[in-house]
Length: 394
Image 1 (cartoon, rainbow, N blue to C red):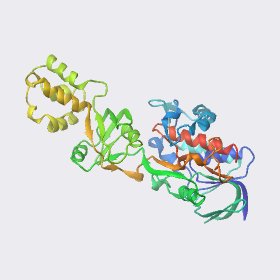
Image 2 (cartoon, rainbow, N blue to C red; image 1 turned 30 degrees about the vertical axis):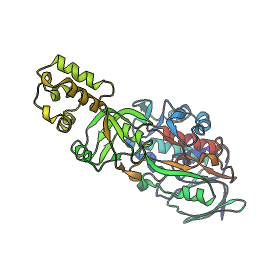
Image 3 (spheres, rainbow, N blue to C red; image 1 turned 90 degrees about the vertical axis):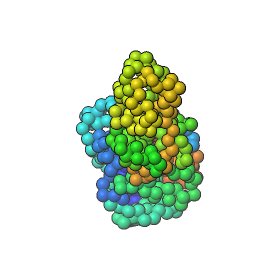
């Protein structure tokens, strides 16, 4: 039986970060990854270019039952620390929008960088290794398809339930349950909405069309692109809102977020009285969308010049354009969710080290913990920061 100082279950962003951070301190580190290669989510992220962090990392970009928990790790390993590592490896990158940083070329550059750091520090990585059981009798024993290993510190970096085809599983939550740790309910987050009502036919016909809009629940609001799909709505604004939405809630879609739509329509009437509403509105919204809205909201005035449409009708239409009330049937679920909301309660962990308060030597990092970032590189930054926090002490 082989012994290590540290065994890390999971070879994703958080696990690899923790691995080389610990190994650089002289610790003997083993990473066990159940799939055939490490870092699969890194490779597919950001459309294959890896949105590896954000210039504007703030605690309010994270959801957690304890919103203060993430502050310690995020302040001790910042976006600037990771950017420095990226630059040290000569990886070209660019800012896309709202502080989101992407590789110029491929996500593979980020994974290669992490593996190079692991290799240089002497980390041992085993893939295609299924963990069968974990026990604790003074030290931790991990029984796997590759043999049995002992360690003093065991780090759980197994991720969440999101995108099972890339290795997402509930194993980390099962281990937390085995050791009696409290957990928050799990939910698919950063995920598209689906519809089963009349809106589904509209979204099907508009599939692929994107429009800058505001989507809101009672609690939260985002102004970013919204994408119509054959199942409902996606795009950055929708993915962001999905982390706050709960089943049964109404979602408000504002198609003209920077305009008072009713005032805009009245202005059109004054400026182009002989024109049709669809013609003028198509200057502000995609034509296909305008035609769908015409059939839905003003079919009776489709061929009526603006001058002949009563102001009260324009007022009502304007209110609908700014407040289109929609009721999602649900989300696409873990199959396409970028992250898993909920997980191991932060009450169980030290915010400085990520170690369990009631189970010495056991650590939880990354997505398995009840800390979930917004879209835009925030979840990767949590992976780097929580992995570094644990790697400093294991």
